[in-house]
Image (cartoon, rainbow, N blue to C red; front, side, top):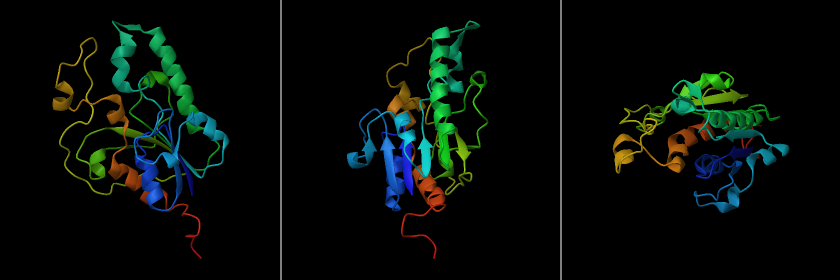
Length: 213
């Protein structure tokens, strides 16, 4: 199966599919950090929608769409027009992936703000459902794919991401104590989730040469 993992520099999902024999590629405007540049396409992921794919798993930027950022969109009851314009552009990118001419699609993002009018998501997953002891509420928008089933439910130790109240900078050490992390770490897919995607969705269309006879 030919798989595009869009907006992924960590290569976590890409490597999980590769391990099962699929022709998977990560794609991001940034260099990859997963150790396999030969599987990484450092271009605008939207340009790759012109090519033929069996499956697209997309992680479009969520900064301006996430419900967690609602307190920055509306300050003292007034909408920040500049931020709203950025949210509109983020939604356009999201919808390009969601409506792509591909049989199997997964778009991943945090819970979105209602004001942005994204389509209803298919399911919500948490890292602790896949052997990772963290809370990080994540929505999946699915087309041509079944919902992802939990593989190893564990007790979460805390939140992977916790926002800083609007108008206050994080004090030194706060991120480590309260589950705060930099943008790159916050956006990485947990290995347990990546493995579940490859195991469950990779079986729908096996690698070439492994089809049932």
